[in-house]
Length: 410
Image (cartoon, rainbow, N blue to C red; front, side):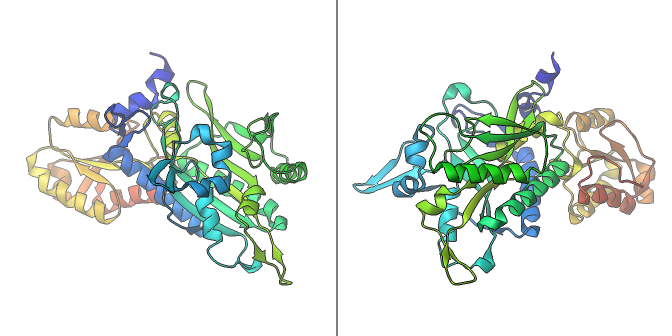
């Protein structure tokens, strides 16, 4: 079997019980199982905390809206082939499953008057959007119809755009390092021929210049025809074990939406000015992200977002109470823990390794009496028995620092 087959996220998703695709639910609509949901929840919490520390304000917005919202945003005239048909609820009342979050975030900015003192205003959400993908292109988590997007829209004065894009690139690098994402490179996605683009040449030239400058000399390739219909973008690419390239993170400049939604702020002289809208995603959609992460790590996620971080293995029933008490202490320390009492010890150790659990804690009569545990790491290393408090502190330190290693640095 080829390595790419061994690490295919669809195969591993079934084996590790991360997600399931059921024909009854529909193609392109995977269901996250408890193990996959636990890993996803840990990543979502990390991303929200990273954004919060960077000055983002989180919102919730509905995954559908009135037809007029998407006529205003330009999606119905430029993106209709990728959208689900409108749903008619009355003679003059049609609703659309949104293909993007930016129209709702424009309404967040427009909710009240804005001052230059508020800029950049960073509005973030992990929100649902929908694409009417054809069945032939759907696959596992990598191409789906219901998308959970880590999205944000940063509303800036023109003179703030360069610094804002550089800060977003810094955040992307930080998130990628924590998750174990290995970017293959940058792509500057530009206009191509055709009539699908909006805005004038001067706006496009200015937006492209700002993105080139923000890359600060980094190596990149140009992608003519890969721009959004409203502006150029920086796409951060990854390559999976089968050699397929995809976009994992993106930064897009948009002069068009602020015009369409008549967005404005008051500058220091009391004049009304138009903001620039920066669309950005640190890690893209949760579905595509996990398709990549499952394959990149062959299911062995870094300990901080592993579905189960510690499995406890009492040698026999005499250590069952000690294992339950240790599990309680591990949960109180914020760890995801299970107790496995079924079958031989060897079989349970092998099962923990098969499930890619970072730590297996073995408790025999000696360990239970001494209040200790012997840790086995999923890479095959075995540590000498140590006090329970020390073992939990070791794991908690690796998790807290989001280390890619299973042992903390000395």
